[in-house]
Image 1 (cartoon, rainbow, N blue to C red):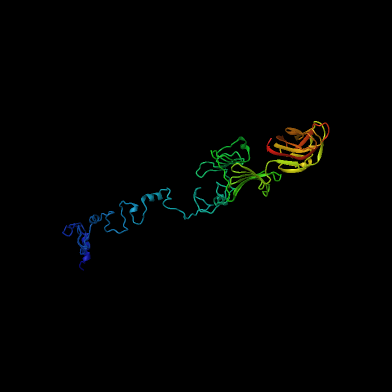
Image 2 (cartoon, rainbow, N blue to C red):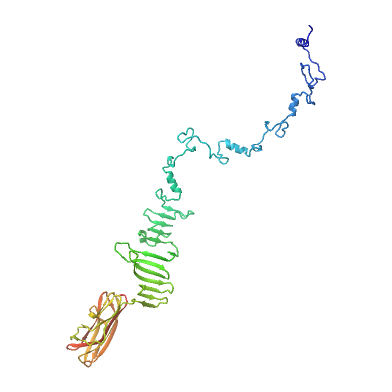
Amino acid sequence: MGYTKEKRLINKIKGKSQVEKRTPIATDMFLPNHSGDHSAGNVRQTPTQDLDLVNKKYVDDQFPVTHASTTGQTTDDHHAESHTIASHNDTTATGAELETLTDTSNADALHDHTNASVTVTHASTTGQTTDDHHAQSHTVASHSDTTATGAELNTLTDDSMADTLHRHSELSASDGTPDPALQVNASGNVGVNVTPVTRLHIGPGTGVAAWFTTADGFLLDPNAGSARFALVGSARAEVILFDDGATADQGMFRFISEGEQSKFQLINDAFTNIEQQFITLNHSDGETRVGSTTNYMAVESDGDVNFVGGAGLQFGEIYVADGSTAQTIATGATYTKSTAFATNGVSNGSVTADAANDKITIGKEGMYKVNVTLNGSIDTANTRIDFAVFNDGTICDNVKGYFEFVAANRECGGSACGIIDVAENKDIDVRVRHDDGGNVDVTCVNVNLNVVQIGGT
């Protein structure tokens, strides 16, 4: 059998090695060729045909890849060029923000964990610190730093009354000055812009007198040159001062302004009856009335004084008119009280006319003007009759007179007046005497005794 092509090839490999000669085909590189087939292409330093073989150096020179030159690269090819986070087109985050998210610092401005899933329970806090947050349902009272409850917290924040939870003895102004603007001291005294010295004290004055510091009252002392207190009502305004003692109708005082008048009144404990309305100020004409609604003294704006109803000065009168009864007067220096009076005249106030007892009783002490006039006759000629006013049994030397009869049964008369000081509940009367040696019958035809108070003692 002859050698086949395969045997001849094997014998060549087994035989002496040979160095392949350089030929025009292999001038670029040393390429052992055992296939015997170079039909796929030519080996060149710089390939020019689609099927030319290439070398490593050529490939490296052709692909110096940079961030700016991505020739032949796809979008997912990795490259090591230096660039920033913000240069990527799928995010607006910055490198500084990425550092904040990974360096254990506070990242609240970048994201939150409101809906973060927390698996740690209130009973199981393994790996958690005392400040770690967890969403376990629990009460305010379960916390270790308070004894308050959730209900109490609601009361403090829902605009309801919280009197049983806390107290405030001071309140400051909205801008902080003064501080305090309102305070209550240990005695329960309330002070507005002042430390209180009485039950209610509006300052900043500290008191007008030493006695006020212990008084249970109201002190308005703004410590200003001009102070004002105003009480305003749409129809009326009134101030009431009263004693709440056990005795009924103790004479409470009320000042009321209503309509066209301002009034000072005394009212009963039940506020149902005006005991006395003693001063009324008319807004329209400036008239001031003193007394009740029907009996009063009116002082007009020009100073004139008028009396209305039963109002007026203290006065009283007794008299006899056309008398014909004779009274026997004994002889001597002693005065005898006249019993001629028959009629009570007008009287007012505490003055009592008492003609039945021939006297006038003065109920209020004071200075009174006294007048006495008389005329009559006697049964004896050439006799002097003296008369005088007596105050509580004592002759008033400034209120006396006399007249002389030169003939019997002839009428004569006289009068006297003066000012006397009369004590409370004392009697005023008229007394007469004569200078004859025997008894004299005196007939008073017309006699008048009257008194008018003109002042106090």
